[in-house]
Image (spheres, rainbow, N blue to C red):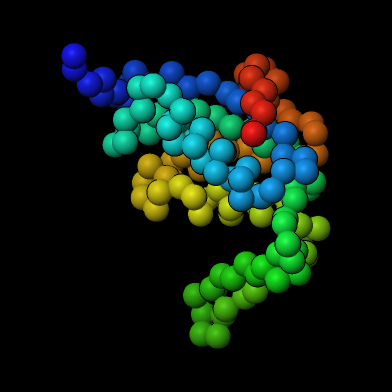
Length: 143
């Protein structure tokens, strides 16, 4: 029996929707990253981008366990001298909850071109409505 090695042209992508309300951010990000990479598929091929499209709803209602809401900090550098910026997750969850979820998922994807391509198939919405009903996404319940 030979191993199935998928080609880029043979990938058939599906659409999934996940409700993030009252789910821990890290556990949600693991499941979303697994769907984006395609590791849930029986024909998963590591060197081919074979993941699916994922829509995350209710990003504003995602849970951070423990004292992470007060202690966790997102840091980035502008590129200028002394340009280290910090944003606490308390303000990030109020201003841009979509960015908090996207950053958590991006941290769990591979740091290469396949990981960057996978991240483009992630759509995060702070509320319950989304604009991708024409794609008929299947709801997934994260355990």
